[in-house]
Image (cartoon, rainbow, N blue to C red; front, side, top):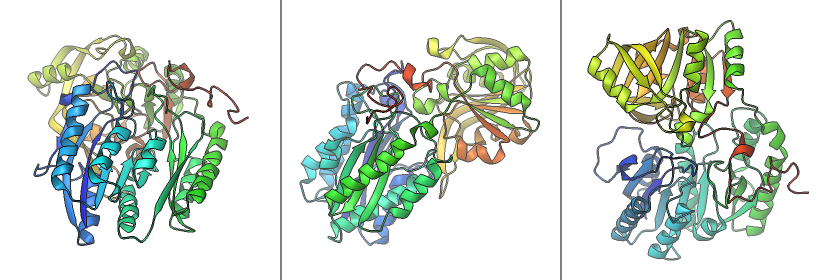
Length: 483
């Protein structure tokens, strides 16, 4: 058997003011030297392929931090390169695609369906196509009509990327060998939101889905959480089931799971605190560190990660013994690196990407640490994933350690602090500009976790999102959308 793998991936916040261009994509091609843990799914595809004694061909991987629409020229260039590499590798028996599921480009509402369709036209009807997606995606009927198997991450935070890659590989490999005949079905859950899998009732539900797989003809079950900041007609939560040669069973399982998911909708609601409420709760905790998630300025959802609302509130209150990460401000990083460790500088920080970023803050800071080309390690169920932060500095202002980076991204682990000399265990408050991916790394050290809704590009009050193209006959706009 000959296996080809590759992908073009990003998550598109259609409300973000920042376009996504070629400079924003990290592209890995065959022969490139990369750090271990930077292409987890493809490494797993390769390991599984070679374990069976088959031939593995890596085409390419292109990935960008979530932001606004990918430009047409960028998308078409990357897509066409992937397709050309597939064409050059033909004939193949299996194609494995690592995509996102919420990618939008100029002129393309659904990049994933476009890519899968073009792959099918190259390989023909008999080659097996498997697709791994982020759970913050939209799965279309066209996708399941064209691919042979689609498997989503089950965890949020996404600690199971490699595990789901193995699941996908096994389903597609068995199909290629004629052992199984995957059939897929979707069910529309008629709701939009963010759903955190470490907490009940979702924790037990996800565990139940995992236990159902591999039994009674069920090959895979995925919850499609959706990406709430993508204004496309397909936005909304779904359930996806794969069975062995039984489309009616797939439809029954998808509906059963989807209706149960929908039935949890009120329990899954979160009421994020305002800035003042979050700080009051944090200051009332006698131990610490209290971790406050600034969900609205999460780079992982397409925000700039340069908002100043929370930092200003902390300074105005005179809060010290605190830390905040990660501010994206390449200019401030450059100035701090020029000054060097120990420099005391007057610096203008943040607030550069528009109203959702707030106003820039003029601060007097001390540069306490500098790390060039810094990485953080994101905890996974297997080996950690290495995430680049770019050049990074720690600026101390009135007892608050502010982590500033040249590369936009969210804090996935305490590494963003500790790599710059900050002892997180001794801090009273840690503010992380992240919705949930911080959880696996920070939960073990936190005395308490508080989810906050400051102003920002990824504000978690879904009924305030200015949708124009989404059918809002869904919860929370409609209490009983199936009535």
